[in-house]
Image 1 (cartoon, rainbow, N blue to C red):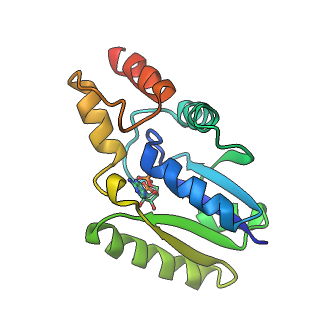
Image 2 (image 1 turned 180 degrees about the vertical axis):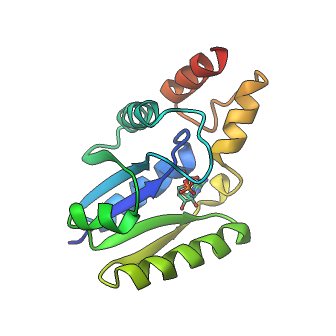
Length: 161
Ligand code: ADP
């Protein structure tokens, strides 16, 4: 079975991401969740915080056997370093498609040995985005249906600073 890397900002990880991890884990013998150090969006959480929170969230949800790593620079270099065969991404609405399509074709150009594999979101997570979770939390709203408790606690602590 193949090895895959699931890259993202994970700022923070949500139940939408965790659902993709759970499903991808069934198809790949090894799955790396790769937290990008410097995403194109400016993150609220540092890369160390995002790694710790991602690990804690996966543990809390009983998702075992996943290695959480971080990378900077080109994703294809990270995939190469970890002996990956595939790059996993999630698709929510139409709005994700354009960006994911562009990125997949660019990555194929850079490194044709990797296959990009897309998981369609589960209906109940189709609206769920890290940016929305941060906004709701910043205004004191309940995010417990969007993220595990460990993420909610870490996010509240960060936003209080
Ligand atoms: P990036 O900045 O690389 O897009 P994100 O953490 O926002 O990082 O997302 C990482 C991947 O997870 C992307 O492929 C994104 O489409 C997917 N994703 C994010 N939220 C969800 C969700 N609710 N359901 C399914 N996939 C999702």
